[in-house]
Image (cartoon, rainbow, N blue to C red):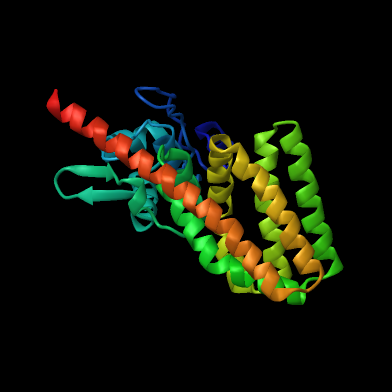
Length: 281
């Protein structure tokens, strides 16, 4: 969810008599925020601006009085927002130097808001590869449990997701295709009936949708294979063929993992080449 300063301003406390400051735009889209704006929403807005490049990784935020004045909040509220982002690994405070933005790979891995932001910010494929590794470790077991526990309603959700994938792929609607792909796996999770696994994957759901959209663009063959293997997994789940469902899921995610590993390696190589080139100039 993108939070704008304008949306925060709409939450002005009716009991607040302090006049709101005039909007200013010295470097980012900073507008007034009423004092009643919650610190967590201010933190989310700062995170939005980090993703937008207003404050890139390793950059320093403006001084506290400046940020507080631009946002129209007390310094206490600002400090609470900064503390929130520090605890989530997004910011670090260096005594005597100021507050800096951390590299995305140090951000809290299972904070859904932060992870979604990281997925939007990263240009490489390291996150996509790590998420696929996690999925392969867990989802084979999920598919096996789904084959044992699934209901007719679970099967209907899987069928709807596969049908949407086919239609979207035929229309080359990659956004809908990617979302339906994740929906299929979500249907399996629900069929498995393990609340811990469901909670774990819901914390990475937004990031999965983002990275899936990116990888679909890179490999049409893999996307078509996903439709094929999803169909086979669904058939195994329908037959309650536990071992077959697990093996097919492992095959599916192994192919995806191999591909994301290639993308991540290529991205890292490009980054290294660019860094060496910059160092030689």
